[in-house]
Length: 485
Image (cartoon, rainbow, N blue to C red; front, top):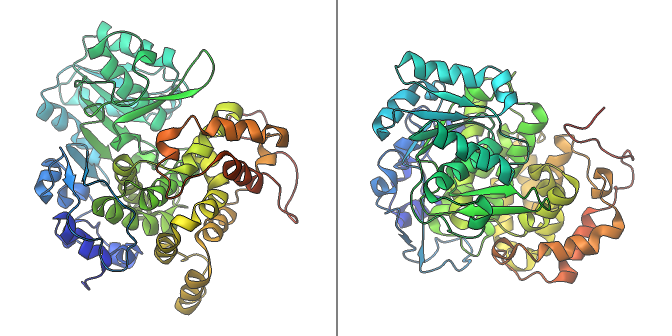
């Protein structure tokens, strides 16, 4: 393997360069991030030192990563804190058949009475009962709770908490997308803390471990499976809020690409776009570290090359997409999100635009707004971007990466995926834009993590740039998933 900036970052982080790549990654774009092909995909992140032994296996204690030494040559310094907290699940297994090890993982955790948390759609697809059957066959009794709602409401979390207590569950298995995983995490912590979930809104209000959570994602890209926060919705006013704690994240993740084949195409696409934004924003974040740089730069080529991998694509494609989304999720969980999320949240709150789609619609405008503080890093991300489906030759691909900005590159991806631009299409009145800009200021932690300070006027200008329907594109309101057709 040729030593480059990302491999230097690995050395700075105390990880061996050959230990962080899935099988075949050198040929599918992640070599651009400086990762070598090593080990089997089923071993996944465990082989990277991010599995059962945690980051300690890679020389990094989960209690905190000291950002050692200068930023590697060619990588722009963003100014990470002197000591950055790094958290990852204790067990991460990636690859076909990963879910088959669930019973063994629970035994390793000392759990004997799990509650399986899911939603009605995942259960109707047969996935939840398949997972429950694996546990029953291994002699582990399990209760299935399938009442997760679409918005991860506070009342849903408290009902799930009640189920945890009523069944005397000593662990929680979350099977589903980000909503189910967030509800499971919040309920597992709430069961050990007491009170109402809104009482824990804010940063690190959960102060001790809850029931251990094992995440079994059925949609790639949510990031919930590797984060220590949960994003919920207030039933009182519809506002989104977060709860978190150092010990609130899943202790194990079993990411099996075979479980993603039944995800609706638009749901999977939106989740993967959200994951791509996680990688981009982690790389541009003020709180970026050598480790999050490494993971984000590995995630971008994997996601952009394989984002169209659905049920009719080879398992290998879905595996690589899932792995790229996991890299992005761990990067975001440790560097936090940024201004794209800050502008995306109000669109979901007010108009129920799916979170990943909302982020994608404003991303090009926000990337332009923060360009002054991140130009070099944005150019680096363009170089990592995969143009495999549009480039006619290696020369063309290289030329595109040298001449395109990150914002136009992101916009081109949306066009490739058939996503129509313009907030006006999605039921956002132009008259609401000033109120949306005011809403953004309520998301201080992510807004303040952007590489430049964005004031109200700059935020409003970004919304205005994202609002109109471009000339020459079909007009008319775009219907969202779940609306009547």
